[in-house]
Image (cartoon, rainbow, N blue to C red; front, side, top):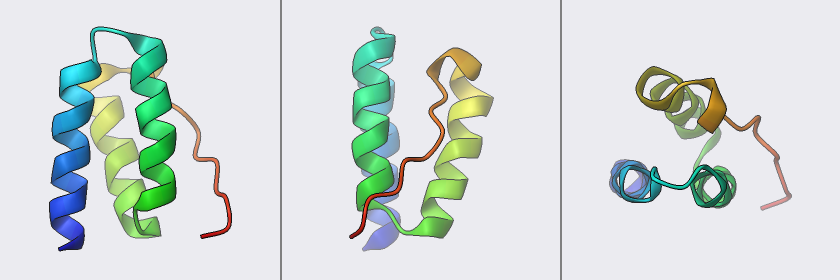
Length: 63
């Protein structure tokens, strides 16, 4: 199920990639929902697919 959430997040981010501000907002929410190892995978995916302008350093809030 965790992999499903990661794939859902990637799909959502693809759909909102037209707006950097919205993309970063959704990315921040994803960092809170996903497991630490999934966050690392997502960070690599964002950099590979969208570049640094979309990248957001993880902000970890107590889960």
